[in-house]
Amino acid sequence: MHKCMKCDGPTKGYKCDVCGEESASHDPNHEHGSDHCMPRCQECKEAEADCRC
Ligand SMILES: [Zn+2]
Ligand SMILES: [Zn+2]
Ligand SMILES: [Zn+2]
Image 1: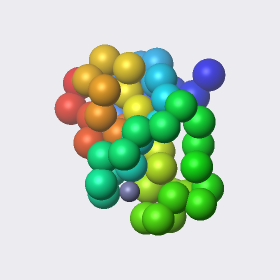
Image 2: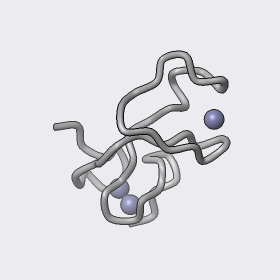
Image 3: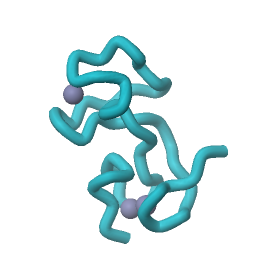
């Protein structure tokens, strides 16, 4: 399983750090680019770039 790059905790689903759109699986065709559709931290439910755990 992928680990959150900020807190090293578990992730669940994916979330865009630009628009906040969530998806169950990675969307390479997301409008803000595949890099912004990033794993979502399971603790705070934020995209891993926005994790403050
Ligand atoms: Zn995290
Ligand atoms: Zn987006
Ligand atoms: Zn977090």
